[in-house]
Image 1 (tube, each protein chain N blue to C red):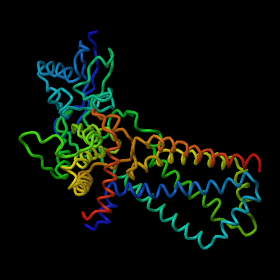
Image 2 (image 1 turned 90 degrees about the vertical axis):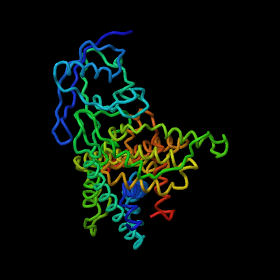
Image 3 (image 1 turned 45 degrees about the vertical axis):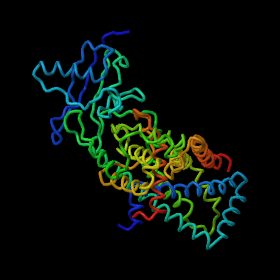
Image 4 (image 1 turned 45 degrees about the horizontal axis):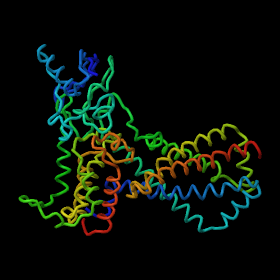
Length: 254
Length: 213
């Protein structure tokens, strides 16, 4: 049932990456429960613009939950309180009339706030680069069973490949660790024949890059797994740990 | 960089050190609890256990040096990780909420760790580094626990140990890469059971000594 609700927002406002930020109190009036969270922010921004004020900067792109561009922390929860959803797929029906919402950017030393809720997540690109590349031919689809991959392996790799790189795992981690992100990337690529030949090199490269970028250390708090919009499991972190032991102690990679 | 430094200086390497040393301490606690259970058989049994243990010299000194080395690795690495993790998020959130992953044990690991260190030093000063020429270990223990303050302090310390073990035990398997849907649920439950065994096993001893000795 569609209805309209009124909310009080406390939004993090920060001019640029070097400025000090603070919370701004905004009233969100007459918000339809059919709106998504980002549509609610659009309405606020339209009102702010008409009043001649600076609209709230926030990251977004596809608004279908598949690009990984959106994401803010709503009342202490990255992508809001719903399990397995991105912020753009979170709808206002999950909130009640009169709720107060504290909206903050993803916070980590490796993620600089660009403006308001928009953060620079390019360290995630650097992590991907540190993992090297795989070769995949373009053109016609390859023969179905030219590369024998078991159903189980394909499923595990696919589950890890569901990662959209939004950074919620880092935002949720009490230590701002990127272990679920690189665990997912390492699993996705190292499980399959295309990536297997460089598995050891990739694992060491990504772990060392993560350390130099200023991400924290995993302490198995499991908050990443609980907040991941794609529900990626920490078994991928265990696979990364196994891969790290193998690459460090049982391979010739330095 | 030297591969050894690169491996054990990295984030996963440091966690591996925590996991392996932590597993050793769980082994130590198991042995310590088994020995302490002789208290239920009375003062003579406990004294005889202590005598037999000390008859194992010089093997015992080797074990003590090993435990001290493991403790130094566990404490230094743990504090280093704690400091790095604090630095990894210089601007904290205004609102913090748990999504269901954290437990009291996991959220308090560094703090319970430091408390355990303080307790271990206190415990060694009480019962280990004391003049035992004209007395027995049973006399020292029963005199100490005649004081209700000691009983309370020891029980509180054991509760802290239990929370540390509750997260530490399953967590070390995850760090070592042993997480599989087939057996992780068992390991997770086993760490709760083991922490309860340590908590109840050690925790009842001071109470028993103060009430029945």
